Image 1 (cartoon, rainbow, N blue to C red):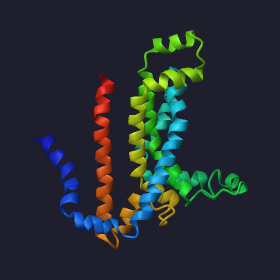
Image 2 (tube, rainbow, N blue to C red; image 1 turned 90 degrees about the vertical axis):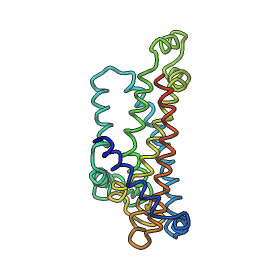
Image 3 (cartoon, rainbow, N blue to C red; image 1 turned 30 degrees about the vertical axis):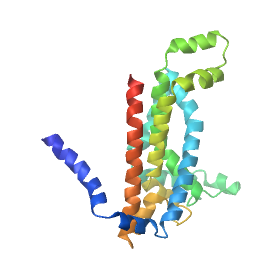
Image 4 (cartoon, helix red, strand yellow; image 1 turned 90 degrees about the horizontal axis):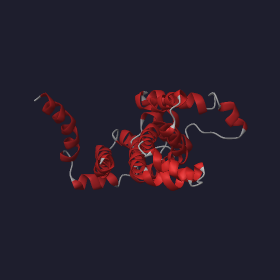
Length: 250
């Protein structure tokens, strides 16, 4: 009974998103001028942030998954920190690190690079909050690889890079794909850190969640349409991941 009450609490708000509007209202909302720029910006920035995560996070996850050193466990703890840090705190931390008056501000100014309140800031905010989801999934996938397979590859003369790309990555691909999907979804839904670090500038830093926030002030239909879109994307990703997780466990 208690579990059913919690389930109802989780389900009712999602149902409300769909039943309090009609497809006509959603289509009208999607035609709102705020929608197209936000969708395009979200698509571009999340693809870029996912590319950064895969390129830099995969080698890190490989080391975390195969290392028994205490330093690896410390690094893993630091990597997981953005999960529990409030998004507003993450945004403030990024601003104090990369803003004009931040820790690296003078260096970036010398290189004529202005990150805060730009599209680059959106990507960095997404990378910061989504990194734990990809790295943790990739670390678990790499840790689950049979050590004997890696030893055989090394015995046959394979270099470390060859072992990673030709042996480890194919064996861990399901976990990597799952982590990438979760990270992309988290980047797509990022709001607080983006607002603090990148602002809410239409066509420049206004992603879909920020567009929902903005549209709510003037056109509830547009806000609801974007919210429904984000929920549908989340449901698709969850459905996509569930069978893969099951096969991975088997």
